Length: 222
Ligand code: GRF
Image 1 (cartoon, rainbow, N blue to C red):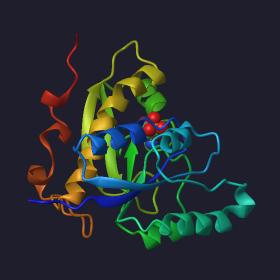
Image 2: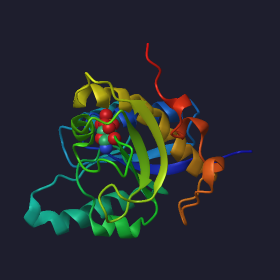
Image 3: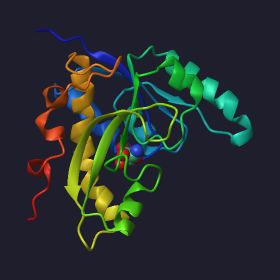
Image 4: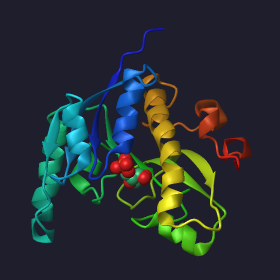
């Protein structure tokens, strides 16, 4: 069966390791997608440099403060729309996305988050997981809606939390899981295995084994 790649626009504010993993998965034939553009709110985001280095289109929509927020929300939507994506991917985009983009791309925006949602939403997920002393954490890919980190969950992967972990070491353990899960979910959307409109979650059948939260997917102790 020939699968047509879907066009995605990636929104990223940070180092861009998920962007790199997605781009690698596409180049390696593991994800049927095309990155139409990478959009950032930060001129200094390493993700932008990475994108440019790989010949991807880049866009900057700088955030100019709260007073300018309504205008920024519209500018962000217009910037994304220019590239006409089938899917918008938040990969470390550190701003809450406004209503214009969310409504225009309803059920076609996904986010990757470094916790097993609904535990630890927000910007300090790893620190809070360590502080609460949870023994298992992980990552979640979910549909973005107007609530923060609370849209329908698509897939999750788990990692153990060690007693000596701090936020950074836990995040370092979670990232490689994100790097597999996100391209995998995008590929499943591209191949029609997973539908976001309406979200079809008919159990494990539509979810890859490695994305299930199961003991077999936990990292083993060395
Ligand atoms: C990831 O851990 C993601 O879950 C969170 O932001 C981080 C982005 O990392 N939303 P990177 O920029 O992709 O390395």
